[in-house]
Length: 101
Image (cartoon, rainbow, N blue to C red):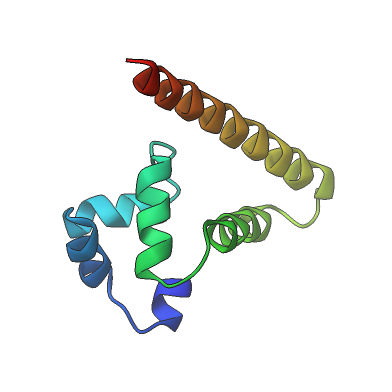
């Protein structure tokens, strides 16, 4: 949504990131394999913050859920946040180990 608001195509962003358009399209479709470095780079290209990108993802999760079962989408947000925090912790641990070498 933010990319479209900025008038950028998936191809434009992919070129900036040095990846193919299909690879970028997978990132937009909530590919969980996105690295922190790539997320930061996307935020820079879109001239926004990582926080705004994450907030947009959370809103997308809410909108995709069935409004008849609010506890289910709240649970999905909580689980998504837990998964994201776990990924961040793993990335931090990996980076710390690199710095120790």
